[in-house]
Length: 109
Length: 114
Image (cartoon, rainbow over all chains, first blue to last red; front, side, top):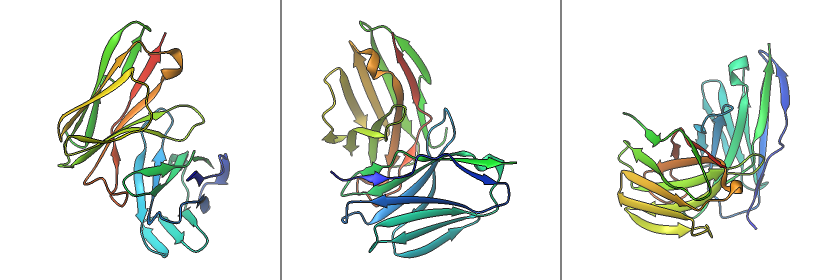
């Protein structure tokens, strides 16, 4: 069964630190990966998409993809209390996503 | 209205009721999705539509019935639900149905079945 795995957390980091969120996937056919942020009681919000090996930066966020290791990560620099949320990783298959269960991030003021 | 909208935002229904969830996307996308999100579980894909044609019915019980009258609107008709169907129901849309397209979610409908 194709899966995307994430540590459920919570991952606690102090304000201003770098938060590192990780995701592994089993489907070697997945070519696209997506990170969503979900605040409690809200719907997922797309933060980053990444399609190629390497790093992709957008503001305080950096997504990293290593297809050989089947590993995706999201780095959040200068973490703020407003970044406290659940972060969902998704792998894009033929025509649908496979989502992980999410990692809960807590940024401590 | 912008993005993806869903109504109602909250719904409480008895097991014998019939209700419908509505989703509308204002992004000019061609694909629309229904997901179910329950606590401690990954998002579960229920249905996928591409240009109003259903391309995925992910072993969903027949008490859930989707309808896609055009590429901007998606409905989920509910009848004789069970308490375990209580969850957050999310609609999403994307430019196409390839897994390489970004999906954008609506705010969701919080459903409680009593």
